[in-house]
Length: 119
Image (cartoon, rainbow, N blue to C red):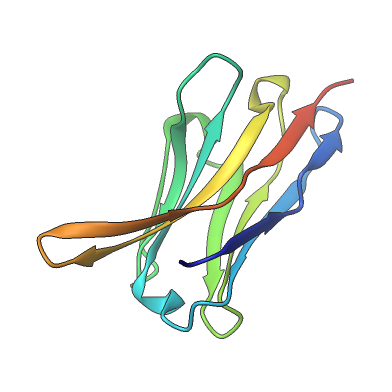
């Protein structure tokens, strides 16, 4: 079982920044696509950003220009830099690793880290 450890969440004022990290000990980290999701109470998880094994990045519209996803394969860690945070960004943020396996996919989730944006 692959373990993911997320960190970097916390409380920040509107307009502030946070950087989330998602670390794993899996030496196959470079073979996974990495996604960041977020979830608010009562809602399902929505994808925020994705980075492929080839470093192709995609973002959902509500974070474009504010969030940046990146990865460091040598450190087996992915990041989500969040700038110009808004109160509506308040949520629990989860990282997910995913790679093809046969006819399906292998998926691992982190435990989540709380981000609160409030004045």
